[in-house]
Image 1 (cartoon, one colour):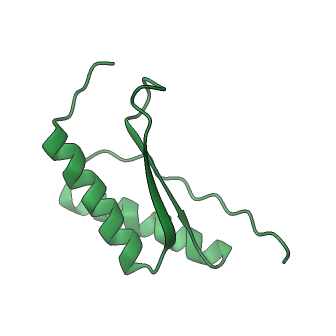
Image 2 (image 1 turned 180 degrees about the horizontal axis):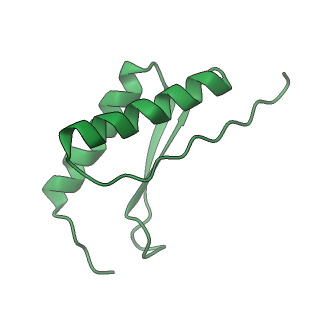
Length: 85
């Protein structure tokens, strides 16, 4: 895989995502290194929210922070699967 971002920049992006998710009270934040599995991305971040609205707000917050700081390009997707509700 051709790495277009430095390790330092990747860490900055992951810190931004973690901070935005923590500010939004996300639960079970998990960062997975998938660079060896795909050429499309290097990391994937998964977090739990308490409702569909909460999950969407978390995704919007991460996207807005990344855009405001012009730090990194992020693909943000909110997926909500509520079970037992």
